[in-house]
Structure formats: C-alpha cells, structure tokens
Length: 166
Image (cartoon, rainbow, N blue to C red; front, side, top):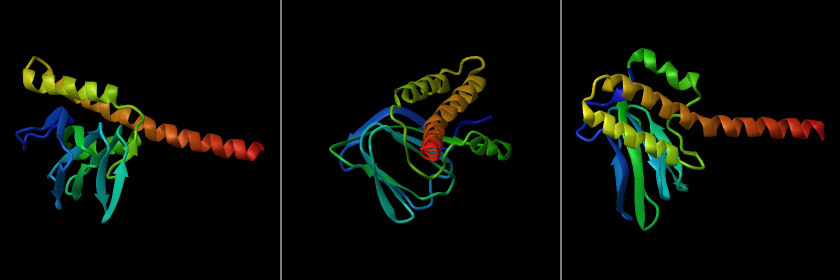
C-alpha cells in the first residue's frame, strides 16, 4: 500500500507559501520518496546542474536522491508529499511511465493540488477505511502525473508520423 511516510511530522501539505529566498538542500535525500508540485517558478539542482522551472512543474525524488530546490522569484509555493513504498510497489512507477528524479512541466496542476488537499484531510481524519482511501488517492495522483509525460511522447510520435507523410 502506497502511504505517506510515518517518519516525518508533516508528511504532506497542500499549497504552502514561502519567501523568495526559500531553499532546501538535502544532500542525502529525505529518506523517502518526495513529490513536489511547484505552483510558482522554482529551481532544482540535478547532477550539479541548476534547472529553472515554470510554475505547474513537478518532480518526484526517489529515496536518497539529493534534494536541492527552492524559490526562483519573490515567492515560492508548492504542494508536497513524502511517501514510502514496499518493494513490490516500485514497479508501479515504471508500469505507468511515472518519471522519477527529473522535472516535468504539467501545464496545470490544479487537479493534482486538490488531490493533495484531499489526501491531507484523509490523513488526519482517522476515518474508517482511511488507509485504503489514501492508497487509492495517492495512486490516482501518481497516475495523473504520468499523463503529461505520455502526452509529450504521443506528440513526438505525431511529429514523426507527420514528417514521414510529408
């Protein structure tokens, strides 16, 4: 079952705002998976290279990946989830073409942010079947994050087909 990590006090948060000098630098990662939805311009550093991202981008860091990211403007807004997986759940990412350790521009993250807010509510509610609900909602969120990636691949196929016809 995919679930928010129990190792942190704040495992997930919807739309958190910080000042423009906000930076996180975890050279050894956070010890769990981290999904970040950027609602403002941001930067990430991957393999020593700084990448500036538009708002509506996201990244999923795997366990122990260095995490260096922050504001790229006067304010920084993100949604995030720290989560963990069992060994048999790791195939879920490759089966659904969910990108790991690389930023992706999604176009719009409004629906994804709403899912995170719903996960926050469910996580604190202790309602009957909340664990199952969290697992399903988190799986849905991750699958929806794969759509921009699959859409980009599809557009690339269309360009190739168009070039072949011409």
